[in-house]
Length: 178
Image (cartoon, rainbow, N blue to C red):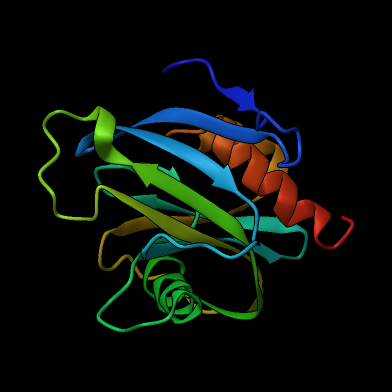
């Protein structure tokens, strides 16, 4: 993994940008954290820091490892509807109070073997949500386990924790002044 860095615009007006290189199944991807301001790139997925009794929902996804709930949009599905669906499918939880906290830009231009399944540049919407209901966990789809962890455990258990996810988590915590 390359060292994450903050980048400030030349005019100094924009806030620092947090970026990193992620190793996805499709190859290396430059990822960048953007706040919730308007986005012009296509939204292809949604993920969320879903809180229940002060802890965050973590799903162990077969072939990937522990991560926060989320996935790719189906058809014309909205990002919030995508996260709500994925939370039920992966974690057997129902969400409420979904709040957009930002976007993770995925830039595949660094991957010379990119297959073009998704746009070369797109974003995943990132939410902060509360868990309204917890259902009995039944491994289904790709999820094999569900946990509720303190936020300080995420960097230890997440399958690919990085500076971008840390910035997103910070936004999720700060939105409620937790």
